Length: 226
Image (cartoon, rainbow, N blue to C red):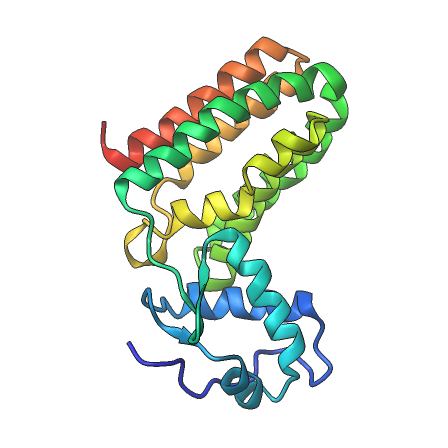
């Protein structure tokens, strides 16, 4: 596919846009438009089309590179990243299964009640976005899902484990596997999240670990069908 064509400036994206606004706008452009892997994302072209400065776009693309959604190609700039193949996705899920159940147990032991309160809000936002099924709500669902996992990673209190897996990047890789860019396992994922949340509410560290493992195994099962 050729470079991104002329785009209308996203709503709320002013000429003095900050990096966070550019990040959200680029995320929406790539996910909502379903840009094919390899599509060039030329900073100067997008900046001109949107009527914004190139600097926050450059910073936003560097941040998006950390999620695995874009890649920087020498002498060509940024392009939409290829999808993870099955082997790469299995490796990602294997790493998550090693880290996230342990982190859930640690988070529960450190601050079960505080973590539960934060998870409740992410779960509520996820439920609301799942009902709407619109483009903006797809991204809201992705963000709430990611925040649920990021909350647990932070609450575990181990910065090295928290840095090992970027929750948003992991979820972007998962969501890109859905045909047509729409999540098809919201009911299962919400039920699994509820089980994790219930274990935190009960202060059951072993239950938190088991529920998180069951959730990730469910994600892997649904991705590969076995």
